[in-house]
Image: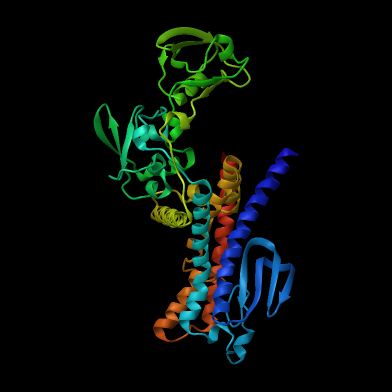
Length: 447
């Protein structure tokens, strides 16, 4: 029963995010068409068959059965419906085909523009509501690098202090690992190691593993200090106390919290701990809980340990932050697609379909609540804008190519040519949809 509820919850969250994205995308087309006095016959969330709706004026506002998109049907336009009956009649003033090319270009581009605007609105809303939590890189003195991890394979070592990325200093530790940083060409980190500056280049061959397994986070910099002990736990019974530092386990030195966690997880049976308490070392023994494998201690709160700063935003600065976040997201996604097309990273590992998107949306929402939902929705809005502007017939980018051709040659492509290309584009999209869906399922099964 629990797994059924989990699946329904995943589908529900995904559909909600998709409906928001589709609504704003189609709203862009709708408002632009109305601006230039074009007749909009239908505004649909979802694809046919039509379930329910209401007709107001000349427009049928409806919800349709297939919740994987939506459409705005504009009179006098060859769209997904492949309707060409109107071509037998003379162009009417309210039809798409009767308007100047520049107006039609705006109408076609408006969906993509509105998706970008939505991303700005969401990121701005997050900045205004939650502000920013900034961790100055200089407060993160060193990181723990787990043996055989991606970070270790790249060349990082425990104790490294990150200084710069691609030769640039950053104001927040998280900026070292943003999407547009990781997907940039010739990615190079600069670290301070034993008093010297060391450059660590990250080859593209590691990006698939980084995307799949993760890389470096603030958690890797937490110290070996205990902030709390669970009552009745093995740690409590052994005599561990708040503020203790576990400096070794079974004779193996410990400097970081994740190093402590890994050694406990890899151990078998009784543990011999060396603890630093108020400058005095103590020897303690304990056995982890056989059911959980844990000893019952908490790490220090990052807010208390690092010099974390909080920045609030007013209305105008929030909008500026929304623009910056949207630009960085756009850059990162474009760079990612570029690396996929060039073969630098795996298409199979990085191209996700509805199953993967639904799963990620659910995971992020479960982890970060409403904040996570809006963050992933903003990311998907930028992704949808990029996908829609691709020059594939049926997509907005395909229609845009026809209009650019018409604007240059002063000659409209024949209806027959457009119909054929639309059908080819539709087949390509169906093929891509099938590929990414099966790929998602295989990856889920493989994991």
